[in-house]
Image (spheres, rainbow, N blue to C red):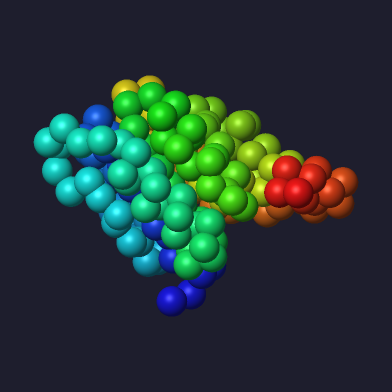
Length: 146
């Protein structure tokens, strides 16, 4: 598995449809996508899928993950409890870009009931295309983990 082109993605039922669209978008762009679930629109506990994705990023199995739920709030809370996970809830391109430049976010969180597919594609692409700036920002991130 190539960690630079492999992404793990997960959602709850509220964001299932958007997750499926993002998976197709990523596949079309040449990414290998691991789907941690859910696999339909039946009501589920978002925590289960948040833990799967955040755990895989925290352990180093994947360098990047994407999580979705209705608002993105719940998934953000779950993911940021894991060591070395920096999950960023984004609903605008500027935030997606800055989450990478300044915070080296390794999990992008989206609200399926907040953003539409066109905006979601722009957020995902911006997030993936933006590099971490390092420098003084690296020291700040290291102080989070310490």
